[in-house]
Amino acid sequence: MIRHTKSTEVPSSLGRGGQANEGNCTAYDAAAADYRSGARSFDIRKGIYGTDVVKRQLKADQHDKCAFCEAIFDANVAGDVEHYRPKGAVDTDAGRIYPGYYWLGYTWENLCYACPDCNSYRKRNWFPLEDEANRARDHHADLTLEQPLLLDAYGPRDPREHITFRGEAATGLTTAGEATIDILALGRTALARDRLQHLRRLTLVHESVSVFGDDPRPEAIAYLERARAELAAAILPGAKYSAATADHLAALDAGQNFLPASAS
Ligand SMILES: [Zn+2]
Image 1 (cartoon, helix red, strand yellow):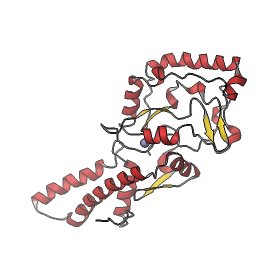
Image 2 (cartoon, rainbow, N blue to C red):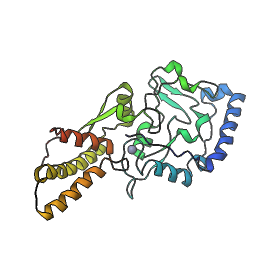
Image 3 (spheres, helix red, strand yellow):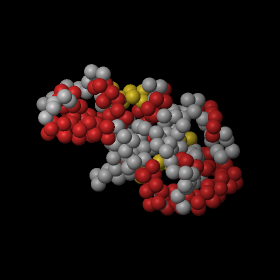
Image 4 (spheres, rainbow, N blue to C red):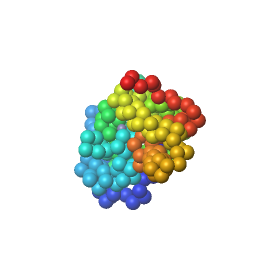
């Protein structure tokens, strides 16, 4: 997970969303008890917050990667617009809380783009706080009092200061880092396996540069130039698993390889 910069220009459909947010706040004030019990719920419309314009802009801001796991969106991996603060309900260890962050349902700052594994199967409505007593339960509350445990790819905290990688394995450096790994299952089998394959391939490239870096033959020099360029590109923000890759290549530079021994 890395930090991204969100475009300052709010997608056009969310302009209507501002009015819809206000409408939901008015509706809440008229029947707060019903919304807090779950008897009533808000219809946060995907036709406003999840339009193609919003998707395109978020994907561009995130370099076509999942905001959480850094998987690249391609023909096999589609994503969806996700609310950082859950829009319809909040799940906690103590149970479900209604009505969720309805007043942020159409708010640009609360949106990101995530893969189905991170979004629909893992994060869902989980949004734990350091202190549950500070949770904003409605639009009258002070959101700044909350200290979310889940890291936000667009938030003020740099995920790299909270999560590090030892080989393909994600490790929390802080409570928020540990919670984020847990909520999103950043160590899940398929993801860790794909990260491992990616890092193994780059390890070979790194080794070739280390072992043959002084080869004076012209063809070797040309190859090594491409290999070094590939390593440099692999840690750019747009690269697949760039955080894990940066930590792995730094370890290799320091003479350490934390990847498990290859079975083959
Ligand atoms: Zn993901």
